Image 1: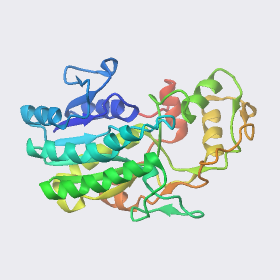
Image 2 (image 1 turned 90 degrees about the horizontal axis):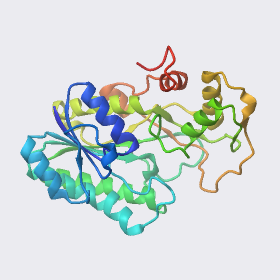
Image 3 (image 1 turned 120 degrees about the vertical axis):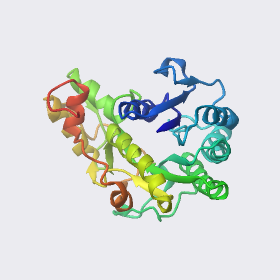
Length: 306
C-alpha cells in the first residue's frame, strides 16, 4: 500500500516509517528535519502546515492512506497557543480535506490520552469518556480529533483517531522516563524519582506501530470501523514497577532507584489506563513486547523484541 506519514521526524513517526517499510509498504515520510530523512521517499518541508503540499504528493504518487503524526506541545515546555491550535486543532482537518481531494481514501489521526478529562479515582478510560477542557495540549488535540472526524465525514474519507497512551522506546527525548532510567542505570548512576505511585498504561513503540499497520488494513476492509480507538496495552503498571522492571532487565542494583527523592508534580495524575476492548476486538491486542524484552532489544541482548 502507498502511505503518507506526516511528522516522520518525530519519536513515533520515525519508528512507524521503518516498521511500515519493513512490511513492504511504499511510504512517503514528511518531516521538518532533514537529518531525520531515511530514504528518497522522505520529504523535508520548511512549512509542514501547508495542506496543498501534501495533496500534491498524494495525487502525484497515487497514495491511498495518510497518517498524521504531526503534533505540537508534546514537550510541556512548548506553550505557544497559536502554534498548538494550528498544528493540533486545525491542521488535521485541513489535511484530511486536501488529501481526500487528491484521491486518498483512508486517514489515521494519531491522538493522545491527554485528550481525556482526568479520571476520578481508578478505572479504565473508554473512548466515550469526557474530553478535557482545561489543558492546552490535550484540549487542542481533542478539538482536532472532533474537527477531523467531522470533515472526514463531509468529504467521504474513511478516518479514525488512535489515542496513544504512554508509548516508550528508542528515539524518545533523553529527559523522558524510559531513556533516563535506561541511560543512568546502564552507567550505574542513581536515578532520582518520585514515589512512583502513579499508574500508567505503558506500550512499547514497536507494538504501537504494528497496531497502526493492522489498522491500515482494517479501515478499507471495514468502512464502519471509522471512529476513535484507544491504542494502549490496557494494563495498569505503576511507575515504580516500570522502573524496577528496567533495572532488573539490565541487572542493575534496585538501590539505584531513588524513589521519593523528587516531589510529585502537581499535574501528575495518579491513574491513566485505557479501556482497549474496542481496538482489541477489531485488530487484536496491541501489547506483545514486555518491558524486559524491550530493554534487551535496545541493548542488543538475546531475548529482545524481534
